[in-house]
Length: 252
Image 1 (tube, rainbow, N blue to C red):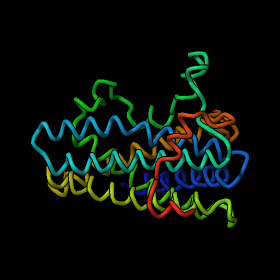
Image 2: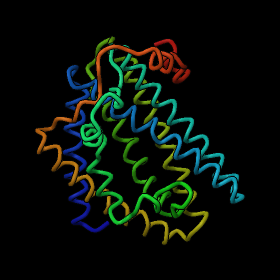
Image 3: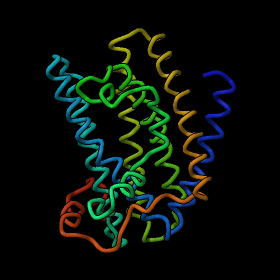
Image 4: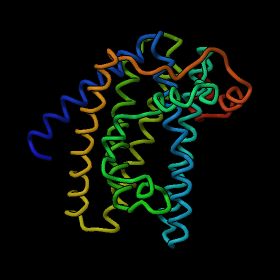
């Protein structure tokens, strides 16, 4: 990463960190942030499970096991956010009840559109995605997420109501660190160290561009995210939230 990219990385990350911390600290905007993370974490599970099956079919049991464990972690993360929302008597919005144009707008991600610019949906499917594209792009996301979740935990107010979420975020941050570690090892099992670092630098630059796109979109919205939550907890979401999220959170 060159000096200019490094500066943009610091600027973009700082802006996103400020906005996210402010939104999760504010009790009015916190549910929306939690819902967005629940959708992202739970939504990645089928993709990772399919990748795990593909790795197994290709004879790479080491990778298959780690992808399966990754999928289990992401499912648990989704449960942590679902439980945090339930404690606020909130749940993720029912997208089926919205007009298609409204649903598309809420699901649209300027960040991922920019991050994977130039790649078609077919190229990013679990059946066909280039392994190095998956390893390097996801490594960057997991590495940064580990720091972002820890930062959000520190941004929460120091009160009893925030204890569960603080511990949950720190648990997730620890998992993300582990994910980044196995992804880095996976790269070095396939290519040289220099080639792995080159791929990482490439996706770091893409991440910087994607962050700038997201920050621009957020400023257009005055720092507000599209609504992802609704009041109440459906029986289905209550059942999800009741599943054990992590042993260390069971007594919180």
